[in-house]
Amino acid sequence: MSAPLEWLVLVGIGSPAVLFALLAATSLVNRPLPERWTATLAGTAMTVACAALSLALVLHRATGTGIRLLTYGEWSASYAGGITLEFLVDRLSLAFAALSAAILGVVSAFSNRYLHREAGYNRYFVLLAMFATGMLLVALAGNIAVLFVGWELVGLSSALLVGFFHERPAPVSNALRVLSIYRISDAAMFSAAVLLRHLAGTDSLALLFSGVSVLSTVGLTQTSATSIAVLLIVAVAGKSALLPFSGWLPRAMEGPTPSSAVYYGSLSIHAGCFLLLRSAPLIEHSVVARLLAGGLGAATAIFAAITTRVQSDVKSSLAYAALTQVGIIVVEIALGWYRLAFVHLAGHACFRLLQFLSAPNVLHDLHGMEDAIGDRPALAGGLVDSVSGRMRHRLFLIAIERGFVDSILDRVVVDPFTRLTRRLTTLDRWLCDVVVPAERPRFAEEGEDQDE
Image (cartoon, rainbow, N blue to C red):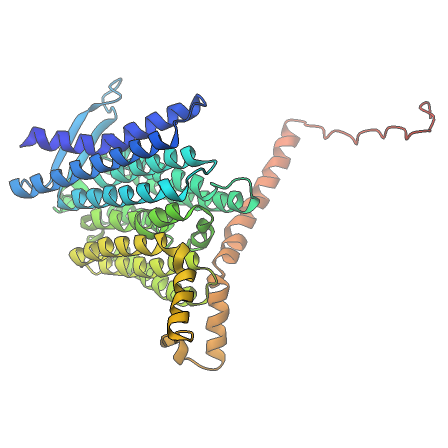
């Protein structure tokens, strides 16, 4: 059963990768495919990927082989530690990969009609194929190199889709903000990879995610295991919009509705939760990491639950509602409820996908409901509604300002970094003896003497 499983996993990941390469190549030579061809290829690739990964999951469950590491050779064999294409296969990774492929297939079919005759139709499907490839690499990564490549593809495609309507300044500005937060997440992920390679002498994830004792198998000390776990939590916080990085989430709603559905409602925002599930054997050895993850998850859930009640648009309200559940999932992982966390993740991803895709029809449905009952439907009460007086006003101010997260990050991180870069620029000019050009001479006005 080894060969069929290897081929099914390779086909599952290779289908969106081939789609990405084909659509990107035609775009680079300025010969984009017609919409009909693009839609057919995208639908076929996602269907093949979903079918192959689902069959791989069934085959894996039938044989009961447990955790397996599939190796497809080295891409760089010029030295002893060449980059190896490895996939870690078990029930968790195959289930999440099959779920991701199914959701991407639904979004692909919806996007075909939603973006019909849109100027950036082909560009959208290039980015969607890039995202699909990245998500499947994250789900099935067997070593740090494969995980990091998938992590980067997910982040880059996400930021580019936020700025999809680049003719307006707001999407471009928000895309740069999202990309900046993702850079922090990527830096934490890269630091964890370097630290793991340096301390453990390996970049294989099979040893970390296999469920055996990490300290005895890999040779990590308690301090080094805590350091790697904390860096992974920081990477997850940036990708899944946990506090204090939640400010980018409403900015990401500038992209098309299908991309919001697949990124910030169903898959991308849950990628960090999945990474925490995979690294649970490592986090279990660090009380500091478990407390940090639980604290961030609980604080994010409370913050998002309050903020979502005051949003004036549907997509932002749904985004913060999704963030509430993501915070709860992180708390479940910190408590060790892994099976419950994965069921919660899968169910919530499907539910938010439906909500985001139907978001454009919400107002139409609401008006139909009002016409049917003859009045506006009553709003359900909650904990915030029971608070009165000065505390209610404070909660409302915090919610309407989205926790002042952007202001705090600007003051603590962005402004000092900007001042530092300006001083370094001045120092560089001084060291290089750069002379600021003098003001350009004023040309003589019409009727004036040129000699003067």
